[in-house]
Amino acid sequence: MNILIKNGVIVSAIDEYRADILIEDEKIVAIGTGLDNRADKIIDATGKYILPGGVDEHVHYGSFGSMTFETSDAAIVGGTTTIVDFAPQQKGLSIKESVKLHNETLAKGVSAADYSFHCVVTDPSDKIFEEIPTLAKEGISTLKFFMAYKGTPLMVDDSTIFKALQVAKDSGVTIMVHAENGDIVDTLQKQLVSEGKTDPKYHADARPPLVEVEATKRAIYLSRMADAPIFIVHVSCKEAMEAIRDANIQGTPVYGETCTHYLTLTEECLAKPNFEGAKYVCSPPLRKQEHLDSLWEAVNKGWLLAVGSDHCAVKGGFEKGKRKGMGDFSTIPNGCPGVQDRLALMWTYGVEKGRISRQRFVDLFATTPAKVVGLFPQKGQIAIGSDADIVIFDPDFKGVISVKNSLYGSDYNPFEGLEQIGRAEKVFLRGKLAAENGKFIGKLGEGRYIKAKPFGLCYENFKDANTKIQHKVIVE
Image 1 (spheres, rainbow, N blue to C red):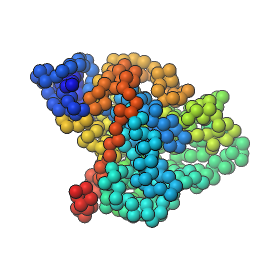
Image 2 (cartoon, helix red, strand yellow; image 1 turned 180 degrees about the vertical axis):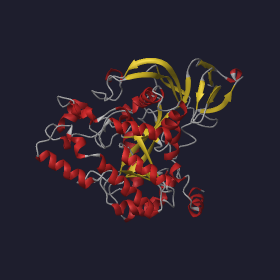
Image 3 (cartoon, rainbow, N blue to C red; image 1 turned 120 degrees about the vertical axis):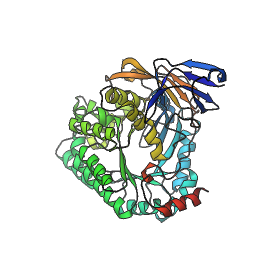
Image 4 (cartoon, rainbow, N blue to C red; image 1 turned 45 degrees about the horizontal axis):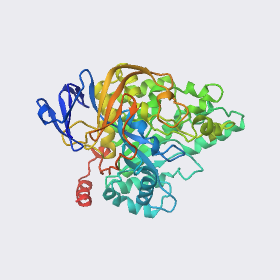
C-alpha cells in the first residue's frame, strides 16, 4: 500500500520546507507535490513537522545488567526507529561470533526498532587484531574499548587501544572509547568507602571531571600516535569536550558525543534523600550546571557530533536493582533509561530554549549518528531511496515526563516531572505505522538487523589514499 504524508513541514539537517512524502515498499519514493493519485492512503500532517526517525547510536539492551529488547518499543514511541546496541565480546569468542550470539539470543525476532551493533572488546588477543580487517564484510563498523572499570573484563590497557587503532584505520572500522581513568576511579572509590562515605552522592566524587579529562587526552594522544580516527562516547564535562574540540581543530581525527542526561540533569540528583540518588548513578556521573551549559554550546557548534541516550534500564529498576548498592555507592548498578525521552528532551530543552535550531536537532538526533556508525543514507534522513522511517511531530503538545507513560520496564524514570513540549504523534518504521500518540501499536520483532558500513563519518576528513583503495577491495 502506497502512503502519502501531506501538508507537513519536512525538517532536515540543513533546511526545512513544505512538501509531501510518498512511501512505497518501505522506502521513500517521491518528495514533492501532486502525488495524490499515486497514493492508496493519505495522511494529513497539517501543522506538524516531519522528521527522520531517530538514530540512537548508544543503547544497552541485555548487556551490563540491563533490560533486553522486549522493551525496545520505548524507542519507537519516542521517535527513535534505529538503535545501535553494544554487544559485549564473550570470553573465548571472536568479535563476529559475539555479535552473532547477541543478535540471535536477544535481538532477532524481538526488537521493535531496526538495529545494528557495536562490539565491546573485552577479551583482546592477537586473534582479535587479525579479525578487525574482516569486520567490514560482516557489517560491523565500530568497536568499543573501556578505559575504566578496573577489576572487570571491561577495562583494557593503552596498548590494546593503540594496536586496535593501528589495525582499524585500514579497514574503516571506527574505534570508540569510554574515557575515564580506571585506576584513579578505583582508588578514589576505595578511599571514600573506607571513610564511611557510601551514599550515592559520592559516586560523583569518585569520578571527578579530571578523571575523564585525563583519559580523554590520553585517547587523543593514542589517536595521534596511531594516526587513526577515534570517537569518545558520552562526554560529560567541559574540559573533556574542549580537549576534543581543540584536538580536532589541530587536525587530529577525534570526535565525540554526549547524552541527554548530561544536558538536562545535574549532580544534585545524586544527593536526593532515601537513596533516591541511586536512580541517577551512571558513568561518567552527572555534572554541575556549568558543564551542562558548555555541552549545549558544544552540540550547537558541532564540537560534539551527536546526542545519544546511553539507555541502560537496570533489571529490577530502583527497588530490586539499584538498591543492591545500599551501603556502598561503588556497587550501585550503573545506568539510566532514556531512549524513549531523547527526542522530547532535546526538543524541549534544546529547540524550545533556543539552544539549538530545528536543523541542528535533526542532525544530532538522526543524521549524524547514522553517519558515524555507517548507516547513512539508508537511515537518518528523509530522502528518496532512504528507508521510510518518519516521525510526524506535534510541536504544540504539552505534557510532563513520567514513569507512568514509560515503556522501559522499570519502576522509575530519571526525568520524572520534567516538562515536555512536543511529541511524536505518529512514528513510521519502514513505512508502517508503529506508534501513535505515545502508544506502541506495532509488534515486537518487526525490527530488522541493519549491517553497518565501514568508513563512517570519523573517516570523512581522514587523508589516506591507501585506505580508500583497500576499502574498495574489501567491499567489492
